[in-house]
View 1: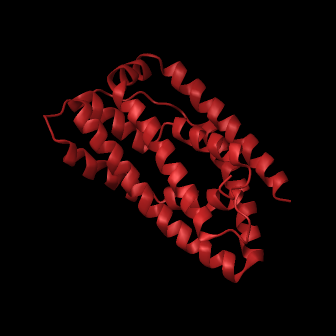
View 2: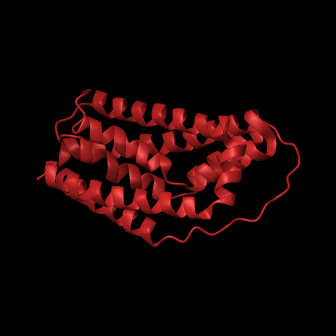
Length: 206
């Protein structure tokens, strides 16, 4: 669909990545827990904006590579599969440390938008992720429209998931702190899933 290869796997992979707690997730949960829905949605928009900038940069680079050097693009696909597996291994090795409670004064959603956007833009792994992720679901002759459709899918699914976090943010934040075992289990399962995706996509791109 939309000329995206392994479309179902593409959707599932996006959801898995969203379920892995990262700096953006923490920023959204903290904003919601401390200052309510407005702050939470401000953080969501900030995270999405930062990710969108990295997606545009990644897509522009990939479009140039696809047109100029199909062999290099194939190498990127193999790199992407290996990178997914590497992320999964890192998740299996991650320790989920408890975070101390923090008090914070009342702030607007705009403040949290800027904070979340800064969190996204200062994470160099984000652009590496998109450069590695997108080629796994593309043909070397894919059109620019396919890249735009992929960006739209990532943005929409990310928004839906993160908006859900905001709506139940306080409860989620409290439960994550109260049940560290649940965080560890979710992280381990996500790691196993990503390793499996890496092998599956590598096999399908042969």
